[in-house]
Length: 102
Image (tube, rainbow, N blue to C red; front, side, top):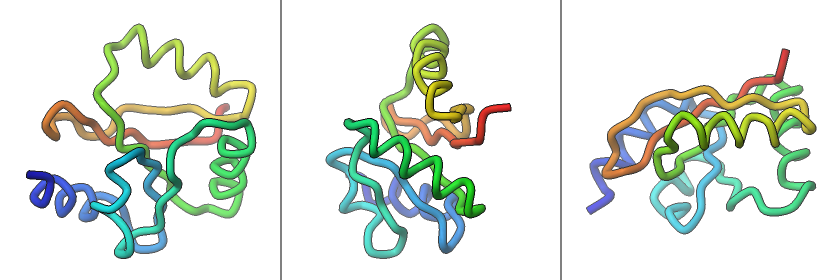
């Protein structure tokens, strides 16, 4: 069921890019590097370090409503991160793009 979705997401994530994902990690690896979830502060700091090295990082996540995305971005600020909507419409999931917070 996710084969078409995984191909579409891999097409969005450039080679050398990283996909943050939960249980869907097997749909992207080994073609793309994967961070399995963001649970601990160290996970968020790992994303921050990747961005500092100019590695593009994306999050494949169930689609957030705008208020939930805003709450997540408030949480991410403490790690110097921002999450922006990318592409929506993957069977209830979306691809979000991590940026270094301004």
